[in-house]
Length: 124
Image (tube, rainbow, N blue to C red):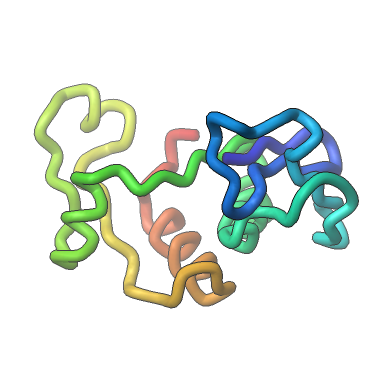
């Protein structure tokens, strides 16, 4: 998880279970330089969070999760179908699946942003 406040990104650290996480553990990044300035080592998906903030200035928080059913659709290389009205209204329909890229890489971050720009999450 992360939140952007002014020129700082507060992001959960890599490898620390949330139930033992302390405020002092939260990683702080300078948004412009992307340098780690405080707290523990940032999430291995730091690039994903940063690219979303760079490309979608209206977004102020990112929650990256590995929900069971979304992960299953991703592994099957299938978009998540639109089953409920709320999904259609809020997201706009089915949720596309990005092309596979190695976790924690800039390639993955850019692929996710590419999918978002194609229409998913245009309602932020």
